[in-house]
Structures are given as structure tokens and as C-alpha cells.
Image (tube, rainbow, N blue to C red; front, side, top):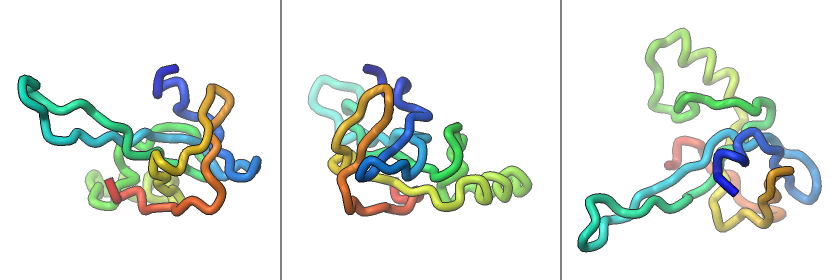
Length: 110
């Protein structure tokens, strides 16, 4: 399965929909010897309660230009949260299940 296959999938907690998977956050650790860059590692997923489409990076709080687009996306992405990879319980093309009671982080975290 490709990560792109999960974009737009329902995110469930205890069998109830909490939103849609809108983004996958990656981080690149320090490179190892012989590599130009490190190997990307999945950090977490961004969940939006209402939208199943991309935010184009505007869910990150430092994005504020152009102002009209930033205001629109801030309104559109309200309530979005980041779930860390370790809190994912199950993923398949039908949806993603997060662990009950998993912490919901700010989307500006990563």
C-alpha cells in the first residue's frame, strides 16, 4: 500500500469517524554515512473533521500569505489535528483506526 492511497480515507476512533486523513507528516533524521540525505520516517497523520482534501500547507500556523487564501484555509482547516504514527492502530484502504484516547496534537507541531 502507498501512503497516497490513504489520503482522504476516513479516520476512526472506537469505530466512530473523527475525520479524514488529509496529510502524512514525515521527518528526515540525520543522514548516515554514504547517503546524501537521511531516509524519511513517518511522523504522523493530519486529520480534518470535515474535509477530505489537501490543505496545501496552510494548516501550519506560520502560513499567512497571501492573506485571503490564508484566512480561507484557516477557516476551512479549523479543528484539524495531528496524530502521531505510534497512535495508529490499523490502516487499510477503507480507513485508518487510531488508538482510543490518543493525544491530538497541533498541526503546527511538525
